[in-house]
Length: 173
Length: 254
Image: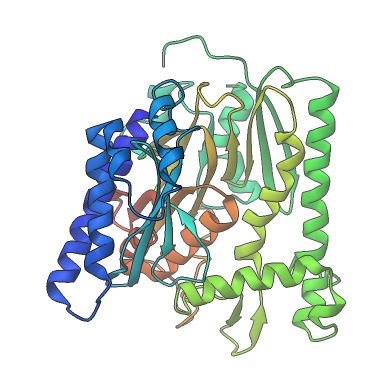
C-alpha cells in the first residue's frame, strides 16, 4: 500500500509539473493557479503528518469534527477522518486535457481519479495501480512454473496447440 | 518465486472458436462448486457467441448487419455493445470502429473487437463468487484475474513474444484486473486501421493491463491500429502495458 501511495505521489508531482508548465505558457485559464496551489498543498500535507488537518481547505466539515478527527486519526487513520476532495486544473496534453481529483483523508491520499482525460467520453477513470511489466529475455524453459497464464494475440485453435498456454495447461502448472 | 505455490486447478474448453482457459487456486478450486461455476461461465460465452458471432449467419448481429432486424429488435446487450464500440470510435478518432469497409467496398458490422473482452467480464462473474478462491479466466490470451486475499500471491501473466511464440517478452504480476494483448501473431494481420482500411503493422503487439477486460481489450486493439502513435495514445490514457514494435523491440508503457 505504501508503494502505491509513493507511486501516486510521484505521479502527482509529475502532474503538478504539468500544471505548472501549462500555467506558465498559457494565461487563459483563470482558475488554474488556485487549483494548482490546492494540489501542491495536499502533496506537501501528506509528508507533513497529521498536523496538516488544521490547515484543511475551506469546504471541510466544520471545526468540531476536524478537531475530533485529528484526535482519533492516529488510531484509525483514513476511516474516521473527514475526506477532502481537491480538484486540479485541466492540463493540456497533445491528445487533450487531463484533470485529476484527489480525495485526502487526514494526511493520506485515499483516492485519485481522473475527471478529464484525452478523448474523454465522459467516464471517470482511476489512475491505475498496476505493476509495471518486467521485460524479460529468457525462453519459457528457463522460467519453468513462473507464469500462470499467457497473454498473446488471439489464438486460433491450431495456433493454440503450439502455444505456451497449451504447454501450461498440459503441465498443470 | 521459490516458495511452494498452491496447486492450480486448470480447465480448458473450446468456445467461440478459441480456447477458454481457467486457472483456479484455493479453497473451492476443485469440486462441485467449481464445476458449476465453470459450466456457468462457458454457458455465458456460448450465449454471447450465439447472439454476437459474425460467423453465424443466424446470429442477431449477423441479421442486424444485413439490415434484417433493427437494434431494438435485438437483445438489449446488442445496443450496449454498440455503444461501447461507439465510445471507442470517438476515443480513437476513428481508428477503432465496429463498422468497417472491406476490400470489396462493402461496409460491414463487426463488433468482435468489443465483444470478446466484454463477454469474459460477464462470464467470470460466477467464478468470482467462489469463496476464498483465486481465479484467472483467459479467452484466447485475454484474461481476467482475481486473487481473493488482496495480500495473497499474485497471478503472474507471461506476455508472449509476437515474433516468437515460444518466448516471452515480459511478465506481469497481477492481483485483480485484466490483461489483453492485440497483435498480428497466430492469425496474421487481423487488425486494420478503420480510418484507412490498411493493415496496422508498425506494432507487432500491444498488451494493456487494467481494471476490466472490456476496456483494456479495446485499448490494446486501438493502440495497435494507431501504429506509431499507439504508445503515446496509451500514455495519454494513463494505461499500463507493453508494446512490441515490428522489429521485435519491447517497450513498457506506464
